[in-house]
Structure formats: structure tokens, C-alpha cells
Image (cartoon, rainbow, N blue to C red; front, top):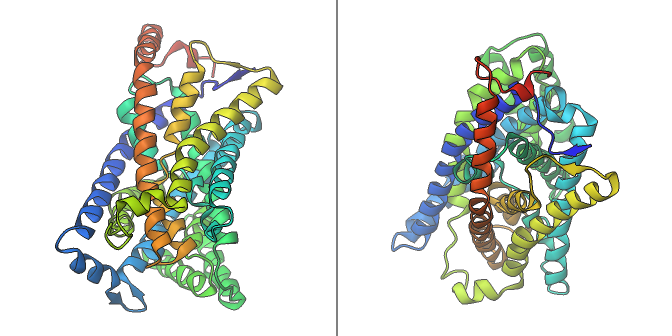
Length: 408
């Protein structure tokens, strides 16, 4: 048995296309976060906070970004999840076992580290903040740093991040539901069911589907369950085999990566250092330390350690030419916990809490440190990646499909 086995040629091609797409989205996400952070700490910081607190209907602008626009992000993530389980790498239990277990280990270790650091401080509500991996940001960094990374490792990172998204959704739905109101939650199942019935019959008319999606979102919001869960449930109803899930993802991915996530990052990352008590107070708070340690150490230990345990007990071997340094580099990329981590920070401590500000600083600092360490490891392996890519290029047939995929 070989860990990180190669997928099919269509899978490898899809991963390459996804990496190119996510590179742009990741750069927009980073740019929006930097603008938000700079704006919040500029002489115009009051204008920034005034805009974030401005109410449009029942919610503030910041709440619309977190509860509304992120529902689009989770809808796209749900589509990707379903495609992976139905037609992607997760459809084969043997291939799916490693990334699933690695994702579980990569969430358990950060949660444990955060809990140990924050024990007895009254701040344990944020235990899930460092458990999430930002799929767009991680893949964007991978596309920049790992230009010659073997496709099997790229597929592993994507699959791990997809499973991580699913687990994060479960955590939000179960542990971060402040007050549950069953009636709206049950009513939300009606528009979700009607949405599913229509898409299963191939209906793509936006004037039919969008009102149902909005009704499901609002009822889910009123139930006390985070409204983004509605996006995932709606995505799970979209059929994959007919290609409709792929077409929906293609249509909504640019909106998610280009609008929804950057706008959320603009307001979520805009923490005022002065309001947080200064950079010294923030960096010495157990919340900040727990988040940073969880993202950087917890993710690396959890993902790499779980992968080693699977290898040890199954007697599997790494693929030809691969090294445990490759696994460590990917594990460090898993410590980029941007979008969902910022959301969980707000759900954990509430807007305006100093713990929320410190948690957000921890997410930004931890993600930046994870990128730096991953860059060092992956750049050191770049020569090896280049050698592997050159070998695969020599093996390519006249149609550009490497011989290693021909039997598949």
C-alpha cells in the first residue's frame, strides 16, 4: 500500500485548475484582510467601525458579511464536498481514509493545545478557533510555493481541507448555537426540500431557486443555528452525476472567492490594536498564545503525526520520491486558519470582546507564521519537486497525458 497514491488524470487536471482559481481568491482574501487591519488602526478607524456597525435592515454590515456572504462560501464548499464524496477522491474508502484521519488529527491537536494553554482562564469557549484550515488561502499559498509539488500531495491537501471544512461546519452547528429555536429550524427544511426537488429535476432557473435559498437562510438564522449551515445543506441537495453541482460551483465560485470572502475578511480582520490593549497585551494573552500555538504547532503535529500513525499501523509506504518533509510542509499549510477561524472567534467571544480581538490577532499571527515556516520547508524541497516534474514530463505521451495515468 502506498500513501499519497496518484489520482486519475482528470483529477490531476481538476486540481491544477482549482489551484489556479484559488490563487486569485487567496490573494484577494489577503489583500482585503490587510486593508481591514490597516484601516482599523488608521486615523480613519472610527469610520471603519462606523461602517461595520451600520445597520442595513435587521443586521449590521459586519453581520451581513459573516452571516450572509459567508453562506455563499459555505454553499460552494458544500458543492465541493459533495463532488469529492460522490465523484472525487473521497468516494474510495481506502483513498479517503488517510485525509479524513489526518483532518481529524489536525483538528484534535490544535483544540487540545488551546485547551491546555487556556485551562482555568475562563476563555475555553475559543477551543475550536485554531482547528480550521482556510482552503482558499492554503491552496493559494501552495500554488505560489509548490509549483513542482507532486499532484498526489496537492490532492491530499485539497481533500484534507475539504474534510476539515465539513468538520468545521459540524462544530459550528453543534457547539456554537447560542439559543436554539426549533420551529424556524424545522420550517427551514421545507424550502431546502423544495430546492432539492427542483435541482434533482434539473431546474436551474434562478428566479425559482434563489427565493427558496434566501428563505432557508433566513429561517436557519432565526433558529439560532448559524445561517451558513443553510448554504451547506442546500449544496448537498444538488446532484453531481448530472453535472449540475459542477455548473453551480463554476457560477458561484467567483462570487465566493471574489466578493463574499474578501468582504468578510475586510471586517473580520480589522481589529484595533489600541482597543485590544496594545500589541504587547495581545501577544501575551493566553487566547492569542493558544490560537498561535494551535495553528502552528497543533496542525503540524496533528496532521503529520496522524499520517505517521496510519503509515506505522498499515505498513504503508510513502510514494516514490516523496519525503516526510513533504508531509510536514503540507501540515504547516494546514495552519492557515483564516476565514473559518475568524468566524469561530466571533462566535466564541462575541463582537466587542477583548478576547475576540486577541483571538483575531492570534489567527492573523498564527497564519502568517504558518505560511513562513511552510515556505521554508517547501522551498527546500523545490529542487526535488522540479526533478519529479521533469521526469513526468518525459513520460508524457503525445496527448500530454503522463503514462502513469494510462492504466486508469
